[in-house]
Structure formats: C-alpha cells, structure tokens
Image 1 (cartoon, helix red, strand yellow):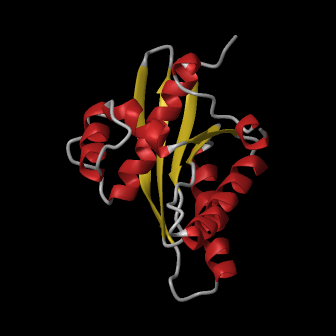
Image 2 (cartoon, rainbow, N blue to C red; image 1 turned 30 degrees about the vertical axis):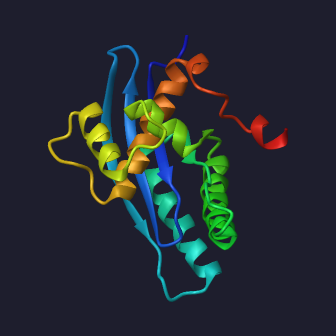
Length: 179
C-alpha cells in the first residue's frame, strides 16, 4: 500500500543564506501543511570549507528534526557572465544533496523556471509574485520572508506537484545529469 503521508523539504541553496521549507503532505486527506520554514545562515568571514560544514550541520538539523523523506533542490542557474557564482553555488548544492542522500531521501532537482511556472503560470515570475503565490497556495496570513524562504517553499510545492502528477512536469531525476 502506498504511503499517504510524506514530508517534503524544499531547499533554495546559497552559501550565505539557504532557504528551507518543510511540508507535510497527506494524500489521504488531500492536505498540504507547512511544518517548518526558515533559513540556514553561514558565516560570511569563514573559509569556504567551514561555510560548507556550517551548511551541512544546518541542513542535517532540519532533515533530522522532521524525518524528511523527499528533498527537492533548486537547480543552479547562472548567467555565463558569472561562472564563479555558479561554481560556488554548486558547492552548496552538493552539500545539500549529500546530506539528503545520506538519509536515503528521494531527491528531486527542479529548475527555477519550472518552479515559477508551477506556482504562477510564468517561468519569469518576480520574487514578489512568488512570495504572493506561495502565501496563497499555503493559505498563509503573511508573505513568507525573507524571499529565500518563499523560494524554498515554492520548490517544496512544486515537488509535491511532481509527486502527484509526474507527467505534467519535465523529468527531474538524476538521469538528466548523465545525458
């Protein structure tokens, strides 16, 4: 019998601030509830290695506390003018993927344009539009702040959509990385 309740964690990777949003999805009752949301902050004056260790410890705490079974991580997007940013973001994303894999979580890789399109109908939605769409979708009393939290919740919501209707959204598994 398929499991009716899933705990999904959406992550918006960053080296200074990583947003996270944890949702409880009950397919039997057709509900999605916010369990936790916030940011993991890393020291800005430490070495890259120490910042990554801080990030690993922070995401460990979130995944352990909520017994997460699915982790959705935003894919890296960077303009060619900023390849260094993409490389640094890949370090943060790698740490997040490692910690999820250690727990044998299902991992979904979601492009930001797919996440935006899922929530707003446009792959080019602004931060403000995303905050409003997330608040509306989750019936929140206020806009999620900072935007990193809204982005993480949006990633989690898109992951829920992928899990419930996989044919509606482009493939998001590791096979994409090997093609």
